[in-house]
Amino acid sequence: MSQRLTPLEIMTKLISFPTVSRDTNLPLVDWVEGYLEDHGIVSHRWPDPEQPHKAALFAHVGPDEEGAVVLSGHTDVVPVDGQPWDTDPFIVTERDGKYFGRGTCDMKGFDALAIWALVEAQYADIKRPVQLALSFDEEVGCTGAPPMIKAMQKVLPKGSAVIVGEPSMMQAVTGHKGGFGFSTHVVGFEVHSSIMHTGVNAIMSAAPLIDWANARNSENMAALPSDLASVFDPPWTTCHVGMINGGTAHNITAKDCRFMMDFRVVPGEQISRWRDAYLDQVRAVEAKMQAVHPEARIDVTETFGVPALTPETDGEAETLVRALTGDNASHVVSYGTEAGQFQEAGYSAVICGPGDIAQAHQPNEFIEVKQFDQGHQFMERLVQRLSQDAR
Image (tube, rainbow, N blue to C red; front, side, top):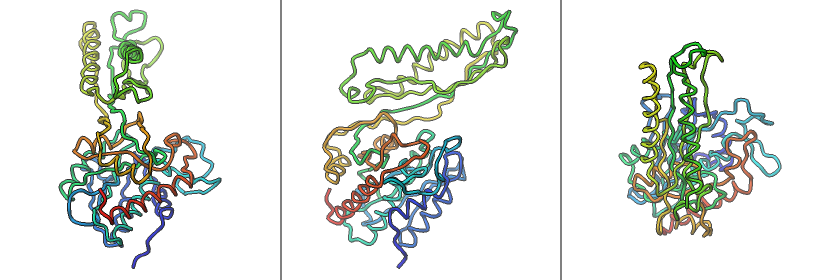
């Protein structure tokens, strides 16, 4: 019989793969695939046709039937470039009751626990199946999960309850905002700034779009939130520009200006409405630019889109997690996950994972040992429950 690794041993192995979103995750996928195969588990990979250096992995253990519990996590991590780490970010280091390393919290800690649970389920007499789903490119907008979800349904019996293991302090998170973003490239026309009225300044043309976002934020903040939105912090849809660059010199009307416009949309509001509103504003600004010079334009590319996770009435996934954790409080988050994408595909979904989201993406990222242990205990209870087929 092949060796069954502990959750810590699995996490240590996963973190040793520097799967920053810009780089490959295939060595990690190869290892997980081989480890599962050693224990008689057949896994399936979905290679990204546009990024051959990346792939998703999923597997099924238990009866060959629908209704599985799906344990979902992502394999990519954010960069460590320029961050002042005290230890090697790709080696798990235990100190002061914490495991340090890139991804310990977000979210290879949960991935390790999910892999451990899948192997344990393989050796248990489970009555209800369990599935593992490991995606890529979550950190750049959850772009790897939708094709994985589609591919899973062609190969595996469809699961019914999805647990997304983003760090939630092992609480049942039942809702999150939706999100989408546009890469916006404003193309002006260069002239000397002394005759700026004959040219088109891309930076100054971008300013009304950013000011439009400021105005929407002010309006949303002042409005009475809906019942669905009121539980979020903040309880309104936000418009945000976090990156901008452009221009050549102080005395030349800027030829180019590039910025990212991101939206975090509360459940109950249509993402399409916000998308259309922004694009209408883009076209209005572009028309004014082209009235000065016809070559001026604004190019927009949608870079990501994540549907909201809407709280379910008597949701199967929520009910399961509450039974396993004893947590009956209400929790929502403002960040996005693949939980909304699973829900959109017809699954019941909830977020529950070890660790504190405040540690995600930070230098010296860590997960507390006691949180990791709580996650281990959660998985032990899950395998036991699957052995009883309790739904």
